[in-house]
Picture 1 (spheres, rainbow, N blue to C red):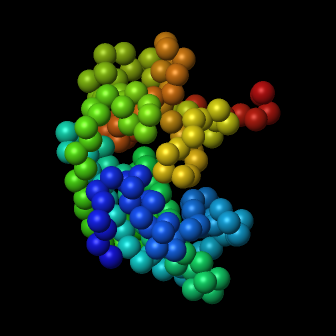
Picture 2 (picture 1 turned 90 degrees about the vertical axis):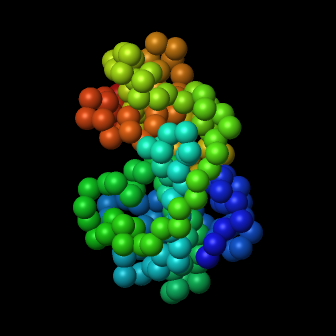
Length: 187
């Protein structure tokens, strides 16, 4: 299904109005419904549409969106992949489904080259100036609200300014990026 908008946030709003009201995540090779709190294997759902959003000033900053239908439950929703985390996760049956989905590509003219989703955007140039300054935080409870209507599962963090930042996809793929997992037991 072709979309009217090219900005991920307005596309999510458009698709919610068309009945894709649930939000899905991927955990342990299953698709998790936020509404039902149930897990589904790849045989249980259909990806009805796949969308790739490229930002024109930095083509390495790509996001993905998948429309999902679970026929047995009569459920429709969205798998929102702001960081390419699901699309590029390790090879498993559920990621094969995502990668085999034909993608409609939209080019978004991001007017704000310094902000992304209300966060300061860090480019590879910024990152390479001081790689130890930025880390990728995973699962932290103090993430800011996500304007796409889902929750961030990971975000960049500027250790010098003590604030969350948006790291571009190219930085996320950089092997030198330190990943910090939230540890509930140590808090």
